[in-house]
Amino acid sequence: MTKPRKINRAFASRPTMEGAGVHLKRAFGFGDEHLFDPFLLMDDFRGDNPSDYIKGFPWHPHRGIETITYVLAGEVVHGDSMGNRGVIAAGDVQWMTAGSGIIHQEMPKGDDQGRMYGFQLWANLPASRKMMDPRYREVKSAQIPEVTLEGGTIVRLICGEVGGVTAPVRDIVIDPQYLDISIPAGGEYRHATKPDHTVFAYVFEGEGFFPDSSGMNHGNGSLILFDSGDEIRMLAGSAGMRLLLISGCPLDEPISWYGPIVMNTDEELELAFKEYREGSFIKKSGR
Image 1 (cartoon, rainbow, N blue to C red):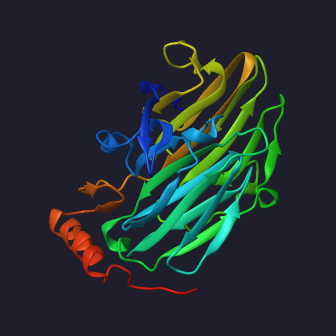
Image 2: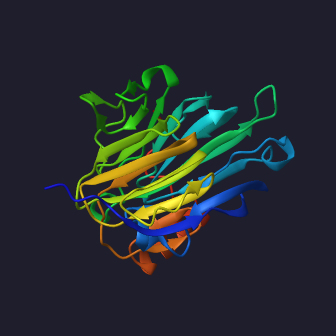
């Protein structure tokens, strides 16, 4: 028998500043990470004024996590210590596994209207894989499949499977789903979920509600964390609703976290920063 997921908590994303002075909205992170296990942080960096984002995220280290960047408008010029260089543009995804250590930079560039829209999600790695070799995936928009379902709902698949279609990002440790879902006005969509996985939604266009919960409408910038269950029902309002639906298998491990490095113990965290200061942080470089 199907058990619909109800809302556990709902939040509004909060304005903050990161990098060299990038204005963005934080959906969650730094204080509530255990609620979203295995996910650590999610930022909404949609902006229309280049002065709010142009300073970007200059060279900085990561260890013990994966960073997932999804661009809706504009471009992000990036480079890393493995020799990767490139640009991710509208509809593209960068899925970077920092593992044992990587140093990279991300420099946003707006489109011809000055828009820079996108999201960055941080996913934790289990203790057994914290020091895995770094790897890097760039998925172009044309490689990301879209499934149009009965009733007009369109699902863009970054990671996971819908309607027999499998997304291009695979073999990820936490077994995630990452879906961009557009539901037309008044439309309803039911999505099956693995009962033991953490599931959350982030609404970024229009509004809607989740019928098996409070019935409250959730609009642009709303973050919804769900209780356990094997299905989520979504009903769009009069303007339709577009949201990210993300899930993953919890790690249930201790977290020692400071800035861009996430380990399991304070000793591991201190060692990572010591190695960064001393120049021995990178364990594998080159393509």
